[in-house]
Image (cartoon, rainbow, N blue to C red):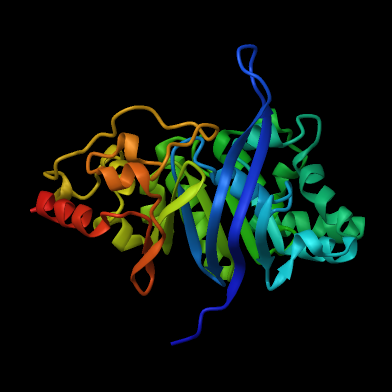
Length: 335
């Protein structure tokens, strides 16, 4: 078996923000958007990252992209720390990592043609205009669009076409890693399937590594090799897709699965546990386990003691005092 080669190594990463209090309170408070996150993504792997809004997914991606500086911890891209690299080295590393942002319509210049949107990053990375134009055509063909779209403007294209253009723009720089933020959220179901199949085809053809950020667990079921679940800035569970989807050990993961449409008819008889309450605040984090105010299994220990992340299998981690009991209850519910 081929040994896994890490391409993204995140070690005890923190990203905190200071915010001013409102009229009724004094001083500043701290938003712990990413809190002690450790994660490794291997070459050729598709890692899914899921959680509710405010869980820290996009902030984590922004730190990996060096769009925002970490408060603590490290992020290595192919064993290089982007935050400590020289400007020349940063430029080389950034060419290896491409991003497809959520809602391509708002991330493409409405006054620029498709060609202009694709070639601009290439020219920034030092490619000649002639080479860049050739590369733009190749990128369009790669996403199953022909060169007649080069001179179209964003308002002339459908949502699916815009997403293909965004993927083409990212692909044109020949990246090793692509970060995809909600790649299908603004698309119809039929178009979602087309985009996911396209991403899988590109990943296999170009040996790409993906970090896919989404609310939709069915997307991750279909596309990812592993899934990482975040809640209030922390990773609560991480493991192979089939294990996370069929045998989740954290109650938050179980609740997310329950909230997701069940496509497998054999699992539809399973009782759904709907989460109580609203997601907590990243400013006023609860004592103990972050999830305990919403957890149906919470004990006094959960309210007072923060759980450690632990391995329950060689490739499965969970951050829960009661993981074994929670998993057993989930299995009984499935029978």
